[in-house]
Length: 115
Length: 111
Image (cartoon, rainbow over all chains, first blue to last red; front, side, top):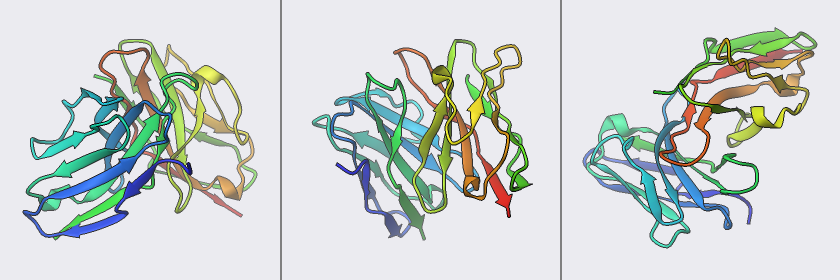
């Protein structure tokens, strides 16, 4: 296990298309987070899971955004009907519940460009 | 609502000079605070947490609840310290868990 992985690393799409990103957390981590990061800003929290339960989703940017973690392992983030304003870096992070409490381990991110 | 403010977008110093990256927060509860760092072409990673009270790579940060600050300090900056630094706050305990990051400060250490 080499850490949190994300796929794809880059995605270019046309406005109006749907996109889906995948995140594979560190295997023993129960918590998984999604963030959006735009230029000049820090990571902006979107949603998080504890195992397969999505415990917080009020910060998803609109109803076009949805996330799943069906078996408590990998997660997907889907953006429907993409808009140019969705262009950003999408980060995934995971953390164990026990141990170094609340430390998050980040993936490399998926850079989305909407044309 | 919790909020993290990093007032400086860019901090430029010479090697060997002291460094202080500022972080102020607003939160009604008892916060847990972190500094994350992102070196060029690397992923975001934890630098230190206030609860650990440790020094990492010569950096320290003290939580000042009176001033609601968690400034990051290093007495003698090194060129390899050049990176983006993000201050972050998280709610302690369970419940509705929303981590909040500042916008980041870019530290450049000149030779």
